[in-house]
Image (cartoon, rainbow, N blue to C red; front, side, top):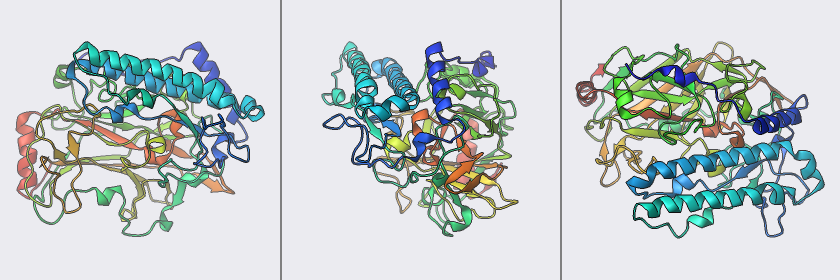
Length: 490
């Protein structure tokens, strides 16, 4: 057995100042909908411009804050510096969420001063980020490394409209108010009738699938339940190890029952599991799906929950299919134990959509997949979330500095990039019975949304999924045998 897993549901109360800001933000959106989610500021006029403007030419305020994702830029972090760097990356995330809370709580001041956001929010944020980036440099030098010359240039942030990420990708266009439930988003334009999505659409569920009718055609399904134990926390052991509330949103966990930021590999190896096959102690986790119906959940006043805009009733999946499949070009090799893989991007709205790949669909319509919208399903149909993981491995590392470089997706022909080898592809399909939101007149009432960083405005494009392989060697070998042998095993 692992450590006392009651720590996984410990409450993270926000400091008083943060709770006051969150309360002010909630008041700003109460009743009349999300006032800042209906802005049409030009993507070419972000905050912090040459004259410090934080509004569009028409005087429309910015909707959120876009900062360089420092963690994605750090490709070569000395091993001895990683723990310190991870802590500073978590500090940078916290600085953004706090700055966004101030942005949401000061709309009146912004309306009377076009330079308010730059002077009162973005400028101080840059100063705090500069100090954190300096400390990252100290961690590099402490172990004999050198600070990347470009690191300091990542300090500045800018304002961003609600309509689209700077990449111009399809994260949904702005327009329409939100639910008025105290959360920044989603908005009406974030939803689409599944019947309006083209059939045979090549969304994430299809375009990133590694399996096919040739090569290694088998599969292995592991049954691990739907988080009936209600194991939740707002940590992220992969991205922010050792950091309380490192995710700033709540996760569902199935499989390994010793999941929090402080779990070591040994803790995971010794833990209990919800998987039917007791040799699978892997951890499978994803942001919870909530219905913004006014329900006060267990985390309604906590960091990661209501204090950071993740509000409403947590919906438990009615099905959670966890399946490993093969590669259409040939055999796969075993995954190493404790391999860590993240698919999707929790910051895709501000980062751009390059790493966004989870998709939404409806039962009975799963040839229609969409990554940048939540779906409206007809009566009797359920919402489906699908995530396909990277299935090419560099053959050496169980993780990398940016948590992405050690794995890759297959190329269009099914082959792996040079130097990578095919491993079983994890595919996760989650099914939910979700009351259909009411979308009319550019407004949405009682929407559902994935939990996320508050500045991401609960956009569907930020959905993501995480995995740590903690199968024992015999079970992993069995997975490989089934996949390579064309068997469908359970």
